[in-house]
Image 1 (tube, rainbow, N blue to C red):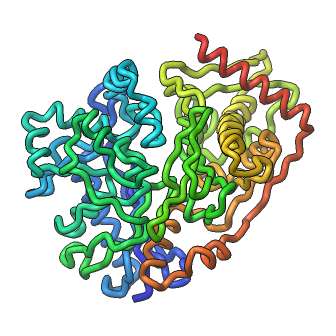
Image 2 (image 1 turned 30 degrees about the horizontal axis):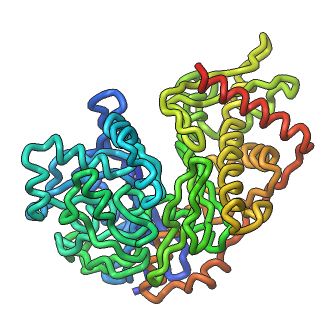
Image 3 (image 1 turned 180 degrees about the horizontal axis):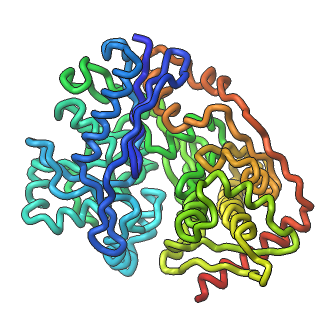
Length: 499
């Protein structure tokens, strides 16, 4: 039993990755599934689509690698966070489509709670802002909309969970209703300081506690799979939300270490150690991971548009055919022009949290063309990262936790493969940016949790030693020019917010 199976259940696709006993990825299977948009601002998934994609990809990667399922020592799961499912305890069938983390249908409910003066209590206990992003108000919406659901939930007939909980329930044939501390910390129902569900917030949102999963460490016994599903009874030994799994996979185990993942959006987490730091700059406070009963906390900032800006160049403007061409085009841009893109296509995330504002381009001249647009799109990611960088370091230093200048940044995700973008990021931060050799950091984080729990992977300290640098980018821009450029960005953002 020397293999680990990692399930990476994402927003648009599911992947299954098989790792060997040396933490090397041997093979991957991937399957996309449908996105549903019933109304403007609403995003749903069919939980059956997610379930079928998980089973199919797991079976595929096992078959393609030619191993017996019984050779797998454990399963690690990482998942899209905040996406909410309510299902029938007896049948396992969902009452409603899963409401995706991107969904905004509970905005009015959040405003009512804010007007009622509840945000300070919610933020203190959960570390989160009062926003439709999180799971609690999504669960309340399902209970409100499906006739009889709340009474059934109170009676223990219905279960609530994020995607990890739903998958574990299905994989174990309904034997385990569990989650881990990282996913629980994103529901807006979990007291991250007390390490338990908040009875007060559940009562406020009218979400019966009888439907909530048991919360465990990220490396723990989560249950054993029904042997009919994958061909053997396999223990589920590791669980973490996708951004926390990437933090683990990047071995950001020391306070002051920060990882930034560049996908469609960007999610940055700064390890703050055993202390949950309360942000003064509208960052989120969250559980980075929990091992041996001890929670490690992080500050988190979310950028809505990162890789999506490159998709816009490709699909919206048609100036590139594939994402990898953006860096090549940016190199050809006129250095005398200063075109700025504020990519608020779906509003602005942290630290602004302005969901209603929209994007804009500044500094256009008659000579502005595709190359300048490409550079502006890539630099917008660097500017937005600096927004998070400044806010989180200020919070961390204000809390007396450490020297903001000593923060270490590790990057991953699709955009991190672009040398031009990462150099631009280093230039605008005025700091080193470390890109690892292992780019599958999210799946690796889930795999390591399971493998460590199974006893075939190294402990935390030795795992951190396996992290290997591909390339370090160091700043090569005059500090005066750097600050002038960032000031122009800040003025552009304020102009967009003020529109």
